[in-house]
Image (cartoon, rainbow over all chains, first blue to last red):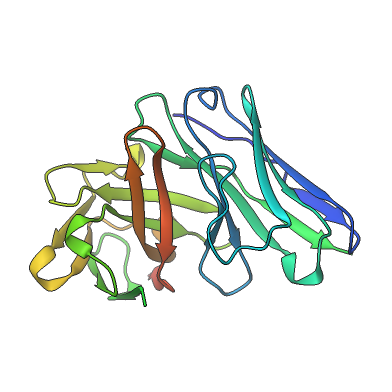
Amino acid sequence: SYELTQPPSVSVSPGQTARITCSGHALPKQYAHWYQQKSGQAPVVVIYTDSERPSGIPERFSGSSSGTTVTLTISGVQAEDEADYYCQSADSSGTYWVFGGGTKLTVL
Amino acid sequence: EVQLVESGGGLVQPGGSLRLSCAASGFMFSTSWMSWVRRSPGKGLEWVATIKEDGSAQFYEDSLKGRFTISRDNAKNSLYLQMNSLRVEDTAVYYCARGHYEMLTGYYFAFWGQGTLVTVSS
């Protein structure tokens, strides 16, 4: 089955830039989406179709894609950004969806 | 306001069955793809199943095919997940999610409910 690979954890100080990567062999052909899940809460989409930001999501969240890797960038990290972040995409069929293993962002 | 409210979770013994429901409001349910996603304790998110807007096609995570069935009732704005032959490893919070699908851009989970906890234990 298809897999997306993320680093288990990323740590940054407030005001710094956090970058979370996600790798998968189908990513050149399938868009990726990113979700934030804070403790005890439901997930929220923060980036869709590689780089689009939903209304209500702060501008410090951005996404990019290059080959088999997509990246979620959080510029000027704030304490409230501490959460688990998941990438999501589809395999080459387009109708089998997977999540990355998740990355725990710690704000020091 | 978009709302998704899951119900039906609880404690069930291994080998048992459970039916989850999701009540939708605040959007055109009958034109939306819908999904179930779960998160097991100490683990990450896992896609479970997705159903097209008219119920004409269902898609499942490979390991769950044959045990789980997703369905919907557009007249009642409701989504369901029938879970049979439950295993300890099915213990998780199950989320109902409204999907966004476009041919060119694919599918993502645009809005999520708060989830319902399913515990499989003897």
